[in-house]
Image: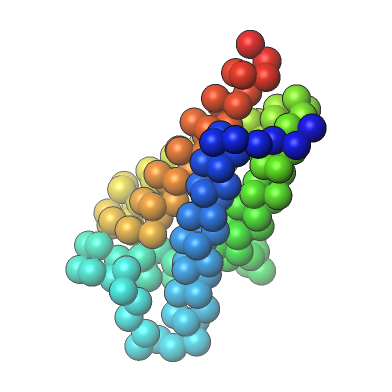
Length: 150
């Protein structure tokens, strides 16, 4: 069944915002790798900097895997495109899969936020935007799950 209405529109807008932020983080990551003097607009102050996070080991594969892992922004782009495409369909199994994946990635956001605060002692505006968008995505998927299952 194809999903229509405001719920699907909100879900798609959230995915598009997540995709834009993920794409920007990927762009910054590539620019930082290519040019050591590059200063992205998300570097506002010494303690408000996205470049420190993107240059770290946590900028690829969330710091959970070895070298050669894709940048977090690339993973985010794939994630949000997949959610966007899947938002056109309303199946219980798909909603359950979306919710499960969203819960796992929400815990990943909590892990990364913990690192941001306690390891980097930094504020990454791009990271915070993704955390907020992802929390909003979780709320929408949860709302959809409740409508289909409860």
